[in-house]
Image 1 (cartoon, helix red, strand yellow):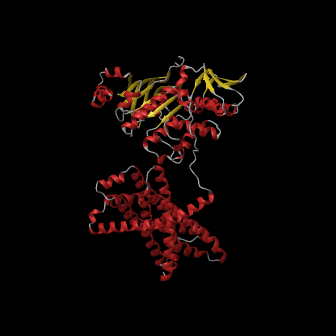
Image 2 (tube, rainbow over the protein chains, first blue to last red):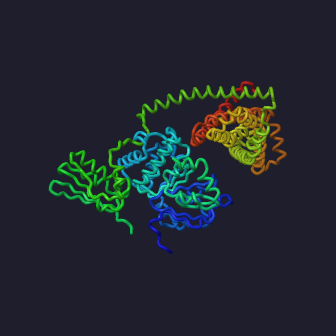
Image 3 (cartoon, rainbow over the protein chains, first blue to last red):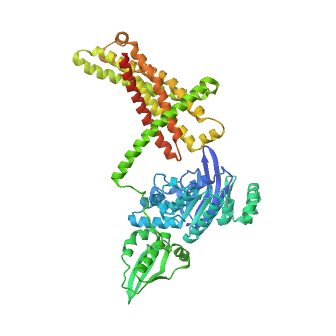
Length: 256
Length: 377
């Protein structure tokens, strides 16, 4: 066995996943390097979210190997997963905030679960996270139902960042936001990624955010991922990839 | 190589406070060292220097603690600065190092007594508006029924049949099992108690009257409220959350016609059958117990039942059944349509629907009791 490469955050080899008897991914390979933003695109139903869920351990795999932060997730026991979960944060599509808790309490859930911190310190760290994602301090005692979609995403991001993870997963971070809000969210992710040194794995539909923030792009076609920089994907002859990036929306995003 | 855990060393050189930080300065280190560092800032020094040259890794929480330490010195009138910031950490320290307002995260709470008063008042006004609302909803249904009576093709027969199947046919096993057991329980208790007076054969009267008149229909209503009333709320509520009900309106469909009326008709129609079935199975349970306990043959049991129990008892039970079915469907559908916002709300409304429909069933049972007693039935 080769020792884990410290520059690779996620390595997927030969992954096959099945849902309800149909194969979603087959012999899928993907590498995400540390400190980069990897965007994953694909047609609706191509299995982008399934891939994300497989990496964070929410879906079972049928075959293949997934290494996250140098650890083979297939052999992890419960304690190993717990330790790994502390090092990664996930932002679900609509934030997935717990609706019975305030935003601040939501951010403190992982702190309570994994660490034993005095309340004053938790409040201070929560205030810091809120400020980091661009929410005002008074948002902390509001309930998720009182927030707009964009604010819920920011709050979800603050919760994902609560334990200062190394690895951040984003599921369609800009879906449902207006173009201005989406662009702001892109900038936020970019600046957080730079200052916190995060590795970001991002599933998206949004061509603008793909072009604006992603270092590399993985395209899910034919149950596999074709990865590369934007320029190399533009040269890829696959018809879906051509249609995606050369279509009217793709051209508009790249002109911007 | 794993980075070493975070540490700090504090030295006083002349009038300079020198604090050296090192190791991995992350959330774990913050949790460990926060209190210790908080006590460090003293006004005695003229200048404070935070030496970061030994810091191996830094995360946002670590940067926050550094910033707080610096701010603590500054607050005591001691100018503090960083030295030895690594390039990799500079951006993070710059991002974090500014004052942030801290606010509590718990939702605002009123003092207990005021909160109690507020809840009392809230409950009273809500009870009032709820009762108005339920009468309004009843009116909506009656109006829809009248429309359907004028043009019967408006009634969605397929939907009605589907709900009859789900709420009626599919409930047969559980209703039967429960009624059978209740019959057994009544017979056993009756025999035990009446034996003291040597009147154990009157168990048949006891079980017959109570099952036919009250327990058969009441048990059925409670089960149907838990099974179907809750399902109505959850189904319609989920449609509300997914905006399907609004979509229906924009397509020119009346949710009362499409969703409420079939359910109300189905449950009103099917309840008497369920109650009848429950009564028969309950009597069967009682009869079996009589056979075992009193050695009373089925023929004897039926003869005794025939002479002891007037047919009116049966009719009293049967008359109540459609009313209970109507009430359960009404309450279930009403709470379903009242769902707003999130999935959590569906759960809460479902609970409310079950509680309220059982409450109403028993209230109406009491009203029926008084009514029939006045009428001498």
